[in-house]
Length: 340
Ligand code: KG4
Ligand code: ZN
Image (cartoon, rainbow, N blue to C red; front, side):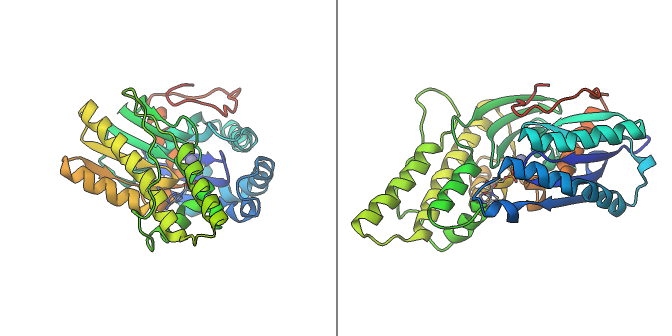
């Protein structure tokens, strides 16, 4: 490619206001993330109305800082990219309106990016040589997917959750044992002190060839265990609960993603989304991958969680195909992977 493609990307789909400047989809010049976690903590989860309001308050400063830190001038930007779904509608609209205004005033193309595609693309930033095909396990607070990434815009969903997302299950179980929000990192840490074999929690098993997931039964089973122990006066070892719950989640995620690789003859797995930071998931997948000569890749934690750099990376592959959006692009809270 002769000329660098500089993209300004904006992400506001949930509770992080983020803006980034990304060059050629792989080089991150800035990635500013303003997290609302401390605000939502009090409520035990994200409150949509509060999220929208906080995005409005933060977005201008976040975008300005991303531009300043990148060393680029506004007139050096080739396109403005923005997440338009899936996510919270009010939160998405804040980023979308801001991006439209900026693209219009700069007279540059607008690129609408799917948030899940963004999570997958975080791996292109971390692993500069990564190219499809590979299998991606997307595990976040809102999503759990196994995706066969065939090329930069062709995705086949091989498995998905039929109820709670993996991160959601982490957050709910964490709350039930008195850990705060978000629960994933806290369970991850506490599990290190517990015995993962102490309690036998169920693994959902579908009776067809499906590689789907279900975490609500596991979550209920943890709640039942805690209620029963409380009623009978049994002592609860929270570290054992955390470790045993985590083992049940990691076992199913690992089994299904390894089966996908075998079924589709793919030798590369990339993990994405907030739960991709999980230490047990990383360790187990690497170990199981080694046995079968499957390479397992992870983005660094800052690129696992919601951030605009991953949106800028996904947008680059749309830019080279001139896959631009019109100014009437709307937020799509239930946008599916591979759809517009
Ligand atoms: O991708 P993300 O930042 O936001 C969504 O798009 O949902 O993911 C957030 C989720 C939360 O549910 C959080 O508890 C979980 O990722 N998470 C973790 C870990 N770090 C974050 N779950 C398990 N282990 C972790 N280390
Ligand atoms: Zn996300």
